[in-house]
Length: 208
Image 1 (cartoon, helix red, strand yellow):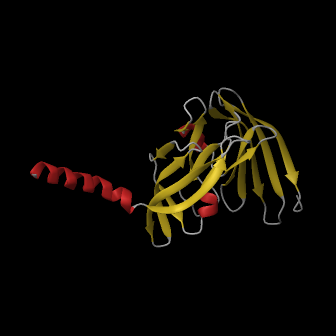
Image 2: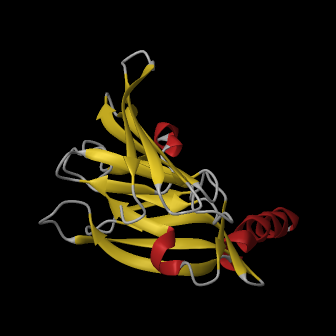
Image 3: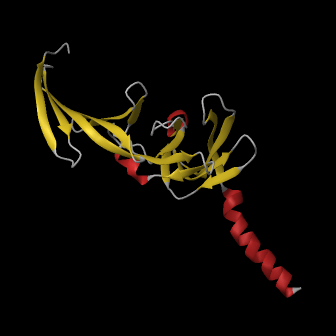
């Protein structure tokens, strides 16, 4: 009797955090263009004005489940539409997954990334992609674009290609604005060894 009671106490101790989890957002999205949708549920703890997310419950169309829980995100209230994104970041034809780490004061939003493994039919964490902040997917050129605000007058744009499952910086732009609205843009190419070379400098008017 004592052993059964002890087992019940231990089970309740570990079960309580799972029961306490709250749902931040739930979306349905396809992993392949013509495939049935998956369900993605972001779980965690609600606080005043924010949500501490530490779990993504993935449910495949056939009912197979996966829990992604090796992360901690602080998501502001109202960020539900932008916090969790499902799209192909490595251009292999399968949509991947990312979730906002936190919303900074500036425009440089960091994310956690998981890429889809079609053989195992699971999402796998990929820290290499975390260098790409505020990512935009350019499907035409198969590039990831990262637009960053360095200061009120300076902005950088980085362009990444995917090689061996990792993002590789291939070129970038620096643009610095003057008080009159004009700006100077510098274009750099990035070699395989990471060496940068300035290829062009442009002076742009206020209307550009």
